[in-house]
Length: 232
Length: 299
Picture 1 (tube, each protein chain N blue to C red):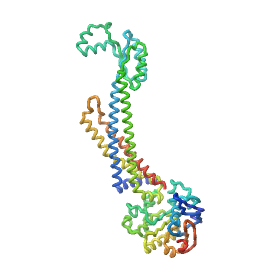
Picture 2 (picture 1 turned 180 degrees about the vertical axis):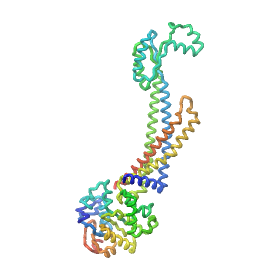
Picture 3 (picture 1 turned 90 degrees about the horizontal axis):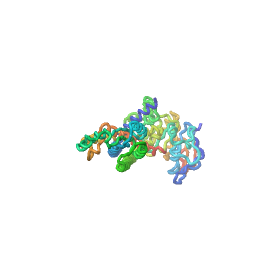
Picture 4 (picture 1 turned 90 degrees about the vertical axis):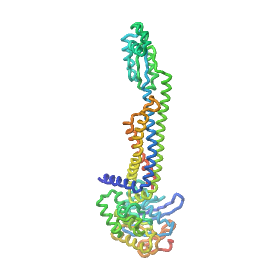
C-alpha cells in the first residue's frame, strides 16, 4: 500500500526558479527512503511539500489519502499531527527543557496529562536521553539536541517521519548514532521514514531505497542502493 | 473536558511566557501604560466638559407671558397644551400676584410702589416658566407656544442661548473626536509594540505549527497574554486616575477658575473612568496580539 503518491508535480517559486519538475514517485508504508542530490536539486523543496510548508504549482501529492496540494492553510495541522519532522537545525524551543519540548507536541493536540507523561518519557527513553530530561537545549550537544527533536517528532506515533538533513550539522560518530535511532524507529514502530541527505557514507552503509534528484528531476530510484555519482 | 484542559494549558502558557519573555513584556506594558494615561486624562477632560456644558444648558429657562385678560380656564387649557409638547420637561405657573410679591421682597423701592396696587391695577402678567429637554430644539418649541391663544411673549434669551448651543455642540464633538483619535493611536502603538515582541517569537510559532498546533490553539495563548499585558498595563493609569483626579478635585475645591465651572464629583466618576481604561487596555492588548500573530499563521 502506498503511503505517499506524488503525481506530475512541478514547483516553481515566485522568483521564477523551478525547484521540482514533473516528478512522479510513490512510497510504501514502512519504507525507509533516502532522497539524495546536491545543493539546489530540490530535496528540501520535496520534503517541504510533503508537510505542506510549500504548495506544488502543478500536480498532486497524496499523503495517507489526503491531497496535500489542496489542503487549506487552516487545516494544515490535521496533516502535521500525522507526521513527525526533523530538521538540520533541530528547531527546539530554547526556553523549554527536554521534557517540555517533547511534551509540547502532545499538549497542542490536547492529550491528557497522564498520557503526555507516559508517551513523552517513552520517546525520550527511545532516543537515550533519560538522564537529561530537565536540561535546556543550550546545555546539550548538537547530537543530543537532534535526538530531542527526533523524540518530539515520534512522540505522537506518526505514520511518517520526514527528516531534512538531520545529520547535516553533526560529526560522523554522532551521525551514526542518529541513524541507528532512525533505523530502530523504522523497524520497531513501523514508521515510514523519508530522509533528505547528501551524506555519502550514511547512504552507502544503510542499504535502503535511494531516490536521486538533479535539478528538480528524478534521475535514479533504486532499491537497496548506494550513493550514486549522477546526482552530484 | 478537552476544551477545559486546553484552556487551562493556554492560560498557564500565557502566564509563563509573560515572565519568560519579561523584557519584551515590559516593553509592551510600558507602552500600554503611557498611552492609557493619556487616554485616561482625555476621558476625564471630556467627561467634565460634557458635564459642564449640560449643566449650563439645563439652566436655560423659557418664560411665557400671557395676555392680561386671560381667564382661569384659559390658563388651565394652556397648561395642558404646553405640557403636551414633547420637548417640555418642566412647567411652572407663576401668577401675576406671585410675581408682584416676589418683586416686593426684592427691594424696598418696589415694595413702596407696588403695595398700593390691588389685584386689578397690577400691570404684571401671568407667566409660565418652562424647562426644555433638548435645548437644540428650543427655538421651534418657543415658536409652537407663541402660536397658542392668549400667549403674549415667549423669551429664552435667544441670542445668547443660540450662540452657546452651537459653541457647546462644537466643543463636545471636538472632545469626542480627540478621545476617539487618541484611542485609535493607542491601538496602533500597542499593536506595533506587540508585533515587535512577537516577531522575536516567530520561530516559536513556526515550531508550534510544525508539531501540529491548530491556528486557534496558537492564537489563544497569545490572546490571553495580550489580555494579561493590557491588564498589567492599566494598573498605573487607574491609580493615576483615581488618586490623581481626587487630589486635583480636592486641591481645586471642586471648581475650575470660577464657581461657574464645576468639576465632576470624584466618586463614582473615577471608578467609571478606570473601568473604561481597563476595558480599553485589555481589549487593545488582545486585539494587538491577535493581529500580530495572524501574520505568522499564513504559511
